Image (cartoon, rainbow, N blue to C red; front, side, top):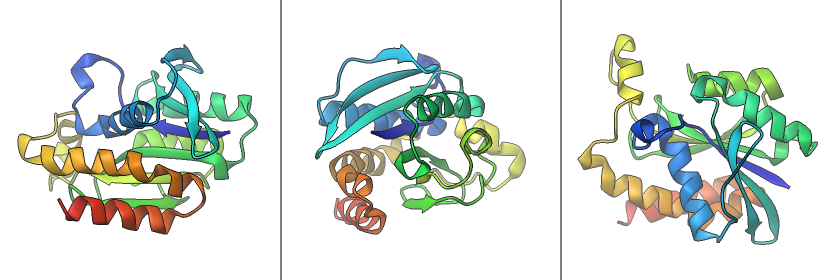
Length: 190
């Protein structure tokens, strides 16, 4: 079993926020790969399915961003998953808008969702970091991530979400560099 968790905040008022890009990607993966209907478990909305032979649990924690580790940790412990089978998709202030990078381990870069997951699981889970840009002033960070994506972001955002869903088998098969490269090529050729 692979666990793919997208980070965000539950509720319609947050659905298009920059902080919710993880939820957006998880929704697209569920749709693109024909996953089961969503159900509530592990303090999250979850859906199960298969991606190129991998059994996958998709997760959108309902604990709000700052407590994401409660949900991700509960599911990982239930399935006794090694950290190598845990993948977290989240927004990243330190990357420019429209850029995506993969990473295993490392710091939380001020992302409280990642901080929470690290507290519940440890460091060496995989991450898909989607750049939302930095507002330039630390005091504006919270309002920046809790604002909807701008209309000017929609083209790269749609292309990136679709590319991540299309190329996710590479990531699940232990090929993060190829995954990152294919997503980059798909989003720069648009």
